[in-house]
Image (cartoon, rainbow, N blue to C red; front, side, top):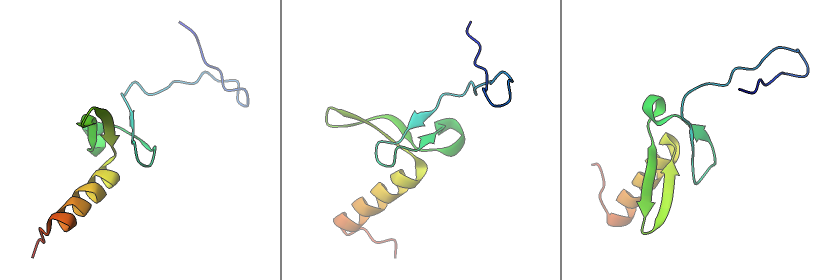
Length: 71
């Protein structure tokens, strides 16, 4: 196993063992189990992942385009 050393401090770096995904829109890394969002989704044949913020925006845009107001 390879060790990763921080050159400034000289200490070994431990990366988190959580599986992170990267949002297709804003390229922000996120952990689906903790934050929410969609990983492994598909739009047609295109694989997508959305962070919780972009997922909320996409769903809101779809509601507006379909005329589905929450009122």
